[in-house]
Every structure is written in C-alpha cells, then in structure tokens.
Amino acid sequence: MKRLEYPFTKEQIRDLKVGDTVLITGKMYTGRDAVHKRLHEGTKPPVDLNNQIIYHCGPVVVKNSKNGKYEVKAAGPTTSIREEPYQWEVMRDYGICGVIGKGGMGAKTLKACQDYGCVYLHAVGGAAQVLAEKIESVDGVYWEDLGSPEAIWELSVKDFPVVVTMDSHGNSLHDKVLESSKAKLKEFI
Image 1 (cartoon, helix red, strand yellow):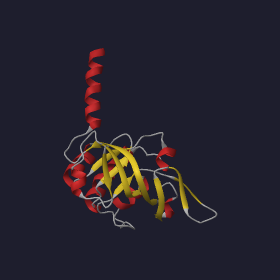
Image 2 (tube, one colour):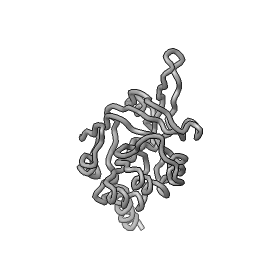
Image 3 (cartoon, rainbow, N blue to C red):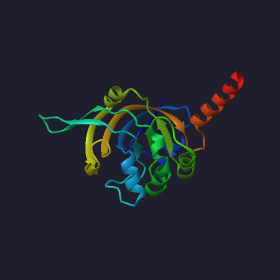
Image 4 (cartoon, rainbow, N blue to C red):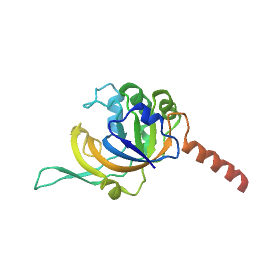
C-alpha cells in the first residue's frame, strides 16, 4: 500500500506503477463530461489544476441546514471512457497529475500519462457511500451553471482508496486484461 499526500508532485506520480494500491490524502477536484468539454473549448479553469487530481465523479452533495456546509453523501466514480476525447488535452494543457474514475481509458490517455507524467487511478464502482466517507470536507464548488453533478467540487479527502491501472511509464492494466481475455477466448473457441 502506497500513500499519496497533497501537495502532489510529478516525482510521486512517476513512482507509482500499475497494480499499486494507493491511499490519497489531500485535495482533489471532480470533473465530468461538461467540465472536460468546457476546458477543451478553451475556457480557463476556475482553479489551478497544475499537479492536481481530477475525479470523474458526480457526487451527491447536500447543504447542511444547521451549519450551511456542504456534505457529500455519495461519491462513486463515473465511467471514464467518456472523457477520452478530451482527457489527454486536459493533462497537457493544465498540468494535472492524476485522474480517478472507473472502467479505464484509451490509447490517447495512456500516451498522455506517459508524455506528461500522469496516472489513471481506478476507484471501486458501487461503493459510492464508502468513498464519500473518505471525504472530509467540500472546500469549494465552481461552474455551478453546469448543474450539481457536472460542477467542479473541490474536496479534501483522507485515505481515499484507489488502484493504479495506467501509469506514467506506458503500462495499462486495462490492456493486459484485454489481451488476457482475448487469449482465453481463443482457447474456448
């Protein structure tokens, strides 16, 4: 088990390898389809994304009526492949060092991980409530005009569990699983 603590550095990221289990403590930002499209179209982000982690997530967030603070009730990962057309550009243009999601991403993102020193981290789907318990606070919300699930939520997390499935060295667990599955299928045919 490895630990990744904020502020994140490219050296920490390049030390991660496919298969590593990681606990993240610090800051991360959510970003789904609308955020990636807006960034792709050239809109400057409302926060500095350099050496930050983007979480493909549309969290369920409520405002506490007593203290006025936001509380995250569910924060499961969104299927990442939808971001494939834009993710590599976001890595290149804004200096992010990591992406969290589920299901993996394609060749463009894998190449960008290698070219720009990033990793793709897999969070467990179906564990939205468990992952929400790892979020200590909501520190900001941006681009609310996109709607709550699509807005950028600035989160502080402690011991947020992920697995490295694409590393900065060009390795992809998703590719390995695909090749292994193809080989098994040939055995059965």
